Image (cartoon, rainbow, N blue to C red; front, side, top):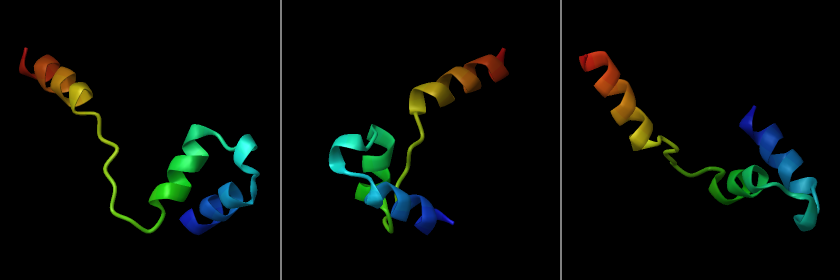
Length: 49
């Protein structure tokens, strides 16, 4: 399924690609982590109260 997203992003001309499209092209086939640790801190803080 991710290959389809990757292939569609690659077919777009560079000027038409969004930041997300370029991120998919740059990271396809690699291990990545898009977790925002600041968001996790807020969740942990709220659960602790």
